[in-house]
Length: 339
Ligand code: TYM
Image (tube, rainbow, N blue to C red; front, side, top):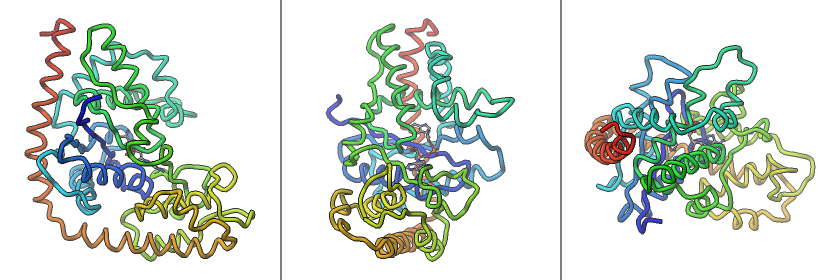
């Protein structure tokens, strides 16, 4: 592994961002960026091509700028090693995606859980949904990125990226750095395992933008008070003991997880603090307060960021990204006889 590995992530902008997206990917990225960007390259991009799969509307450009402000409002300290860019402004992503399509198999893409979930019960399924993970592999491999802060639901796509990269290297010679295994990714993010924030009303399921029930999910645009109310009315269980057990007590475990991530405390410390507690109300109260405080602070910072800050970062970031990506793409094209 490279001494100063590249760190990279992206969040789609086809709708608003949930607390799940925030705690699973955005905040870990901000913390890693602030910790490592003195030496590592940190790429933060908007997968706008992935965002048009489910939905096309007139909001995309505004959402792109807004979503990049989230990183700044969450505490990202810009420096020359941090690069902001839009996927569609770096055409090498689409080019490499096509080339990777020529080594990926239908069988392995058919096995992707996200594809199965999104296509199940539909008569007609867009090719874009099927090919989603190959474009994601291109996003990662173009930059030799090693660490990819994403939630647990995306680990299967990271595994696929590793497989495609490895297959390519075996057939054509060492070309791509493979991203770290999901286990190593979790270690790098200082979490025990992949992060999956649960739906507050139905904690067996992950918190998801597409869940129609507003009470199960917290959006970053919710008022701090309404977010606190949602936490207070979260589904728990009748066991009557605060402990971390995602299988039998997913609701309570989810609250412990949220408390740990929002306050940047090790999960084990939060679990120890609450061990032996029998009143769920006290824990709910505490997590509601943490969420309320966090959202109030975040929204205040967000409102103070001018669009021009993001446009400036995009200008330098896209010059950088095109340089790195085009160099890698040219190498790949030569190997395929295209150059
Ligand atoms: P998206 O927009 O669907 O999700 C963005 C990130 O949020 C994480 N996430 C969660 N984490 C914890 N708990 C949850 N309930 C939860 N819900 C969502 C997702 O795992 C994700 O990290 N495929 C990516 C976008 C992408 C990308 C990439 C990421 C495209 N190319 C290259 C990294 C590298 C995605 O899932 O976006």
